[in-house]
Image 1 (cartoon, rainbow, N blue to C red):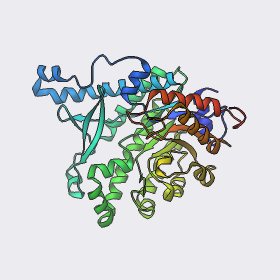
Image 2: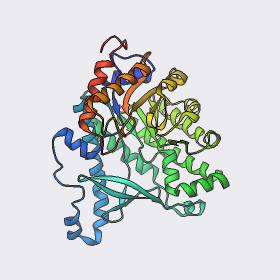
Image 3: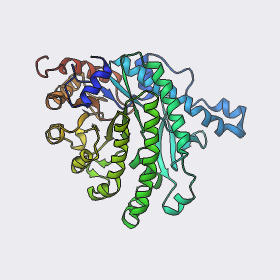
Image 4: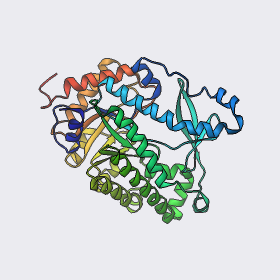
Length: 385
């Protein structure tokens, strides 16, 4: 099987030839290390640009952001291919520069540009839309314009790698329905509105759902077949919102998103960190084809998830990034992969993946993870090792 066949087979809850390996991202510093090259210019070498045209500095930097993102995500796919992954995700965020260290976006969020060894690493700082009044005045994101940008971004990267044996998925990382809404308000204001004015939260969720559905259509038109809805729903201690609030306000939006992907002949996967056990049945009810993260550090027992919903959801993840992939030995990585495959892979419907990604993850640990997956993940499971 090739990578596409392997991934789609798993998403159909069947057994491919071997367990597919996927990641939501590879950070810029590690892309450089895997590919054995340094960028021609640091993302932070903007001083010359500022000196040349100080009055239009922010505008010119904003114009450069799409080029930086294409380069960054192309590098991720190339690095994933070199490491032996089967699948990688790509997705745009339409940032605008405020100055040489801060970005904003159409959803009313401020981001700090952290320096990750010369690569921009956006770090969420705060939201600017406290409630209905601010939302009423806020210039709404142009959905048609964003869909055009999504198409061009995806098409550029897809054409570059379409003949390579790696499967590219689209994602709305940082702009998913739940995350973009609460972050634009800040968690305190979001929680207040959730209690006092849930209709406003419903309106915000619905607006973002409409936007994301158009991005799904654009990415599928550009050649992709899987959409990953990204937005953490839980802390380590449990969900950020109650199951009741999720059912009333978020579940209808997720159903619409999933239906959009399915009507186009594609798949839809949910990514969320944290302890999702109390809302696991709602995730199934939404109709998602797969669920990513399943973080053991957050108390998620993948064996229990497999038992409860393994016949309804493809499970993606479970390899810890806080220790195993950032500080662990080769033996630590191999043991984590072996144990996860033993409980999650039998019967199919499983894709091995880091639970998340951050700059501290070591490239050699990712390579060990892939090697262990190839060793222990050949179907039928348990007959090689």
